[in-house]
Length: 305
Image 1 (cartoon, rainbow, N blue to C red):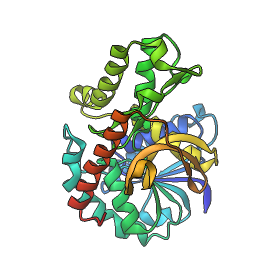
Image 2: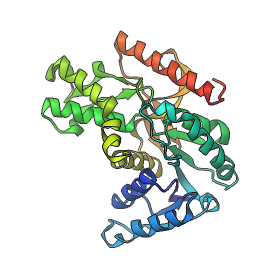
Image 3: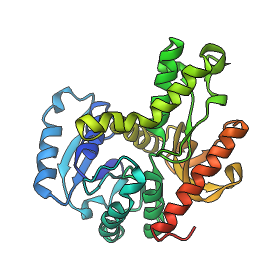
């Protein structure tokens, strides 16, 4: 296995921006792009590689086939059928079909690393991939939602986003829960620095952000590109970084057997530890509801949960 090799399945808006972020930040040494449209994958690879003289380190970028994934450390699942719905769960049937096409090719490739799944609905497709492949699969989940929440709280408080610690939990979708009761700025509760109305507004705009972006321009790409690249880097570099992402619940907040987002310590082996922020009663109820939504849709996808 090449510890710095990343395969990306799906070379569209999202997959190409993940490759761009990995390259521009110098997070890996080799990227292989796979797409059902081989000409598109080749064109994306050329376009991505052209500014190589400006990368912080050498990166080999090429289009390839599933056989090229055999020695990759990480494979990113970014394939979709191009249908954008205003509720990510409405994309389920079409993306399950796409995933069913990809699964046998992935499992027969010899790949034995970690899958980072981005395809929506993220939590359900990640769980579907894990069940169908037997591989370690981590969904990007609320990694981007949490970044959006931190940005909006930071704007309300007048501080840098990196100074805010706050998480969205549960589904990467409409039922997600903004854990505002545990949000902190400089060790102090965010509620001491921001009004309740400002925090509630930050949570609302976080949920709608994806559609506010995708409506006018057709897709989101820069944010998820950076979030997915950060998750890949945490695995490749064994960073042991806390990233909110989607993996199987194992009793957290009394729920189990379904993929949902919580803050997790991510390293070379994948999820090293799952953290459970303090939640108030309403947030706990919201998290349970989010898990119920995910469980129902896992069953709809044919998963036993």
